[in-house]
View 1 (cartoon, rainbow, N blue to C red):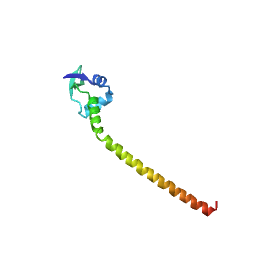
View 2: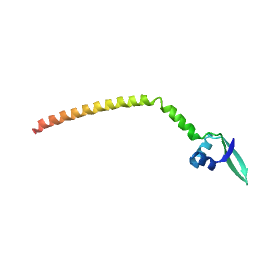
View 3: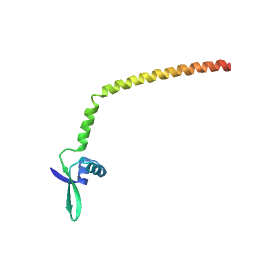
View 4: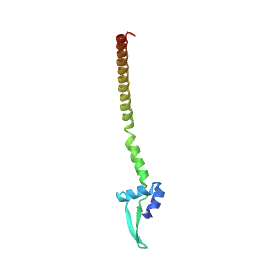
Length: 105
């Protein structure tokens, strides 16, 4: 296990320093505090896995099986919305016809 500064960790994993600081504060990363030249410096213990890789794997596995279900649900919703639009068109047409008779157009 290597230790690296916050800036090194951010550049290695291609994320912002701000996001690394948030991860350190929320204890998502294991850290070591050392005093150098009278200043306390925080080092991150590198565990050979970048958080970007872990999160992308989780996203892929989470979405893959349910994509077909989502597509089916969206297709059903589209059918429902199309029928509602057609109903509204018919209603508007009937109302326009009645108005034309009243106004004798």
